[in-house]
Length: 120
Image (tube, rainbow, N blue to C red; front, side):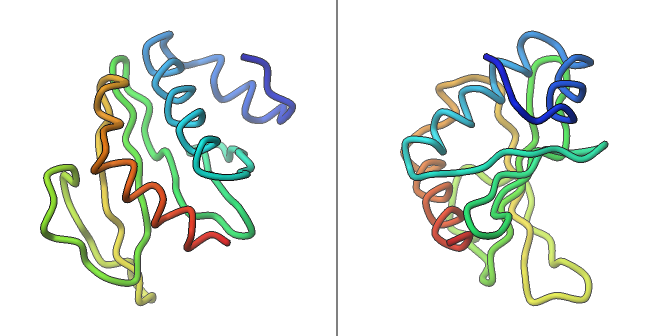
């Protein structure tokens, strides 16, 4: 897949084929939810609508770590590895690790939709 953002292109050059495929699966899933923008910094990839609503904070050889910031804690789930308060904020970062496209299941998609709606 070709990306316009030069920093994103450079960021992905250093990543494994597996983690790039997972990024593309996540991106495609967000595209199904609504119109998004994707951009990168030196250390992460951000997804935004009006504002940023999700971040890939790590791309391992065979996984990606994604964070959704929410105002409330969603403890009753099977998908989040950890939930941590954001210092100096009322947000809680909800961390999920994606190993395969099948990990973007109905539960994860419901949280992706909530995150997207927070970005509008």
